[in-house]
Figure (tube, rainbow, N blue to C red):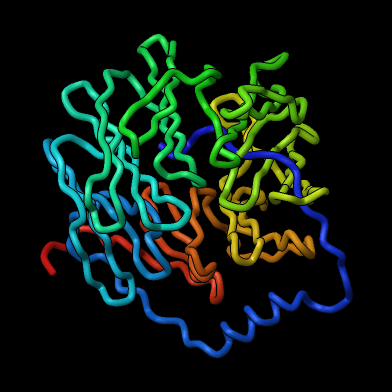
Length: 351
């Protein structure tokens, strides 16, 4: 449910010197002064999966039965859970916005899918039902009340709408593409169909000026974060050129990294980005296994985090100290000690 189109555009070149960047020195000094706290795993045996970071020490997780779903906040270091939301049906997607103060749910029930917007305490701010075979929701990290919703039929035809959750209305998107990434409160980017199914030209659209503009050719994946955009182009059969760009930057950082074949198309390995340290985490192949690596986008230095790892989704904590790991985010990696621990324990009832 986390697989959508990935990443976007070009980025910032920093002057390199023989000295270590000052922000890295401060970060390391701060880390060395603190003893890492122990994780208290979930022991109630009822969690389906972890959904992401609500803050530096709190995660969201879901628990369900055939007719009902619940959303909980859980403090990893205190071992305390708080129910935020309960609903009929199944929560098939949970997103947390970049500022960690709002939550977007997709809930399926009676052949319908609902978009539900919550604040961080579980108060419902907006909901709307759609009759759809599949639904894609692209949440605007610059304006969390704005959502691009794509409604698919069983034949994979689709209609795309721009939702204003604050005003409670939606309208048909001027650009009918199924997958987009917001790059500001009023602009988004998307890949159009190209000469083949793997790549296409990258365009940006401005809702205010109602104009689209081509940015790059032959792009195979895009993504955007709060203050970074990424585009991936194929460099060879096995590698891609990753182009990182920050708002206001005149230049970009590029880095060559391996690709994978997914659903018969090339795509990046699983990855995530640490905004505070400008560190990019992804996987490289090592024999029959994978390595989790960290790439410093300022120095372009690479560091191994895990050897002989499984290539599964990761999500970096807001403070850059931990990574959720696995298809259900049921494990956690300390990026300082490289230790991997379970978050959800199996077959344990009661607490």
